[in-house]
Length: 124
Image 1 (cartoon, one colour):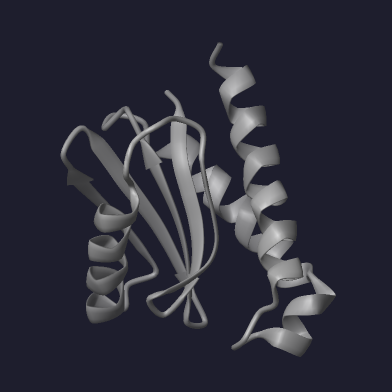
Image 2: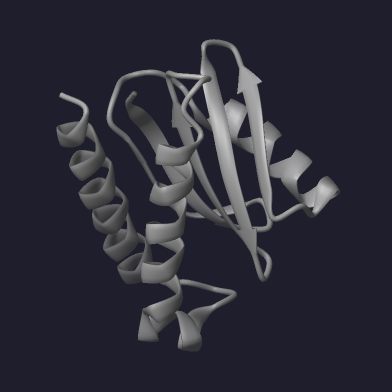
């Protein structure tokens, strides 16, 4: 299983995102983010096209990833938990929670990449 896309969003505003493969995830991610906000459930799983979108919703922040395997729910859940733990420990977020700077976006793009690559290596 591969996590091909991930993002962190405050409401519908994407704070950081990263895609490991080509393709357009933004439209599907925007749809998923709208549904997450409407449902306000802590975890959701949605199939859109050939990808499965997993989300973790904590205190208004949505952690989202797209995978290519509908059967594995444990790996995406662990990935989202790791990303959310790292995000919540970041001191920049206490200062810029609702209007993050480009530095925060770049920092978390690296965090997303780190966890996505670690996950990819586990399944290669």
